[in-house]
Length: 150
Image 1 (cartoon, helix red, strand yellow):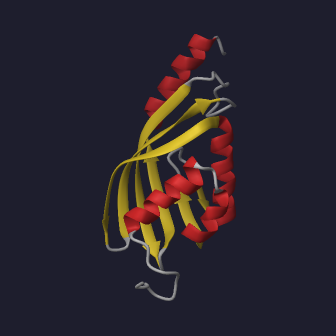
Image 2 (cartoon, helix red, strand yellow; image 1 turned 135 degrees about the horizontal axis):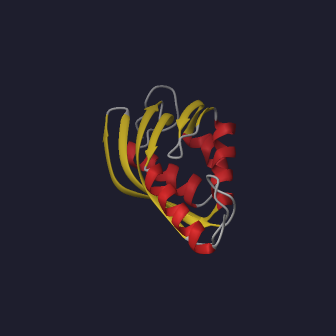
């Protein structure tokens, strides 16, 4: 199996993107981050949070998954070239704990996003995600009002 640099065996970038979302986010296996991410991983999430390092990212994943049960990341499209990939995304989950300043409603929320990945030595070194926060906040406000939350 060919390798890039001195890292682990080469993994195609779309497969690496799939594994990132399926294993870490959809299955909640935050331990997989140590395999898929560079130790100095740089991250900007769809909710606007920015951080560096695997441990900080793992904490962020846990916090999102605690607020949104059955959390899912769906890759709608993905293109890759060289050491980068770009994915059009749909994020969703059931609102079961305080999230973005809104009390839980038990309803499903979803929002779209776009993710730009950068790879180095067969791992993800940088991920910048832009989410439709205006649409998400409009939905949360509407659901909160309907549930009778302040």
